[in-house]
Image (cartoon, rainbow, N blue to C red; front, top):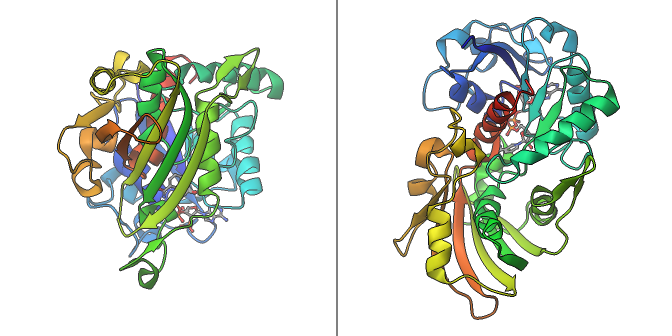
Length: 360
Ligand code: NAP
């Protein structure tokens, strides 16, 4: 298959660098366009990130010499790429307008920014959970008069650690009515250089601006139904979130208690449902899909960020510590890699799904 030309806007940042690392040798996508702020524009990529390339492996060879464009000059992307991954850090309103400008110019946008997550005609996707929501793009294109252009987004970086395991139970017919989730979120979630070391070492910060709202509301959209060109939120589930920043580099962990309405699954059944869970990416064998979407760890002290975040290319969700809950019905710990599964990798998987379904 001829590879599709793609671009990364915000290519010099932490998520942007992860895109470039993960797209190196991608069988479907070939990076031909990199863009960032006017501060980086005009420089060769390796010069633009000198002293701030954060990946363990070197800058991919084919990227080093690419000239960084100004992400705001949408016209410069035309002809160079047929899809952009968006990881720019700007005011939300500016991000919305910028992503719409790319889509209006006929360039599909797959974004990990939160700016468009509640835009009614923009699908927010965890490919294993709500792949069908991409059909919202038909409405989006019709309403906005976009031909090839589209915008699809991925959700907040911490929610896959508990929404995918919850979905495996919902799919089997169980009704969840209440969720209490406490997250322990890595510093990389704040971008580079992140919170000051004096704030993080020997400490836990019990506040991440805007994060609890996203952790409570975004799952209701992901678990919602697409009906007549709009998403009907799953309002029967109540979620309370406590979000904490901890001194971990990568990997967001969530301690979760679930309460069911009606029948509740036994612990053995939950384990079986998680172990056997396969979503659309696994069924379609998409290039970035983890072979196991959910890994169940039997050890009493797992999952742990350092040991489990990289499972299946850092795309699998690891769960463990499944046990009864004396207040709700059952509880567990979930973990997913925030800058891969929760950002660049999750967006690449969404783009693969869009391509497999004929939207690119
Ligand atoms: P980051 O490291 O601060 O990178 C920001 C990127 O945006 C850089 O490429 C920067 O270019 C570019 N940029 C800044 N100002 C710009 C401007 N005026 N015009 C065009 N480009 C501009 O941030 P990050 O952690 O990669 O996060 C990027 C986005 O992804 C954020 O919206 C964040 O909320 C979201 N996100 C992050 C994570 C995570 O785990 N880190 C997870 C999910 C979502 P220069 O280098 O030229 O300044």
